[in-house]
Length: 153
Image (cartoon, rainbow, N blue to C red):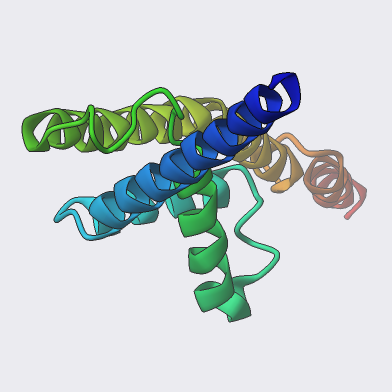
């Protein structure tokens, strides 16, 4: 009797696990067919590009998109099974995720933009310093030589 009871527990656990897998697959299907899904993947790829991760495989954008899609689908919270998530909740989830990725991209870009502005400012200052001016040593020496030649004649 005890062995039969243990057998039933194992069967029930396997059956429950199979139901969870089916629910996860259904949820992934609902997400990937959602109208905002393409935007979600695009926002995800844009974050990867800002972080320099997407630059390595520019020629392989289909592969990057598949990786992004897989990454998104594996980040789904397992507690939110498809049975628990109705359409309006899914809409809110998709909008929220898209918004969060957009904000993340902006936050990642800000320090890069500041760095680029700093580098451009330094480049401009160095370029200005490298330009000959009326006070640069070469011009000053040429002027002095001309002025001295006037007095020698």
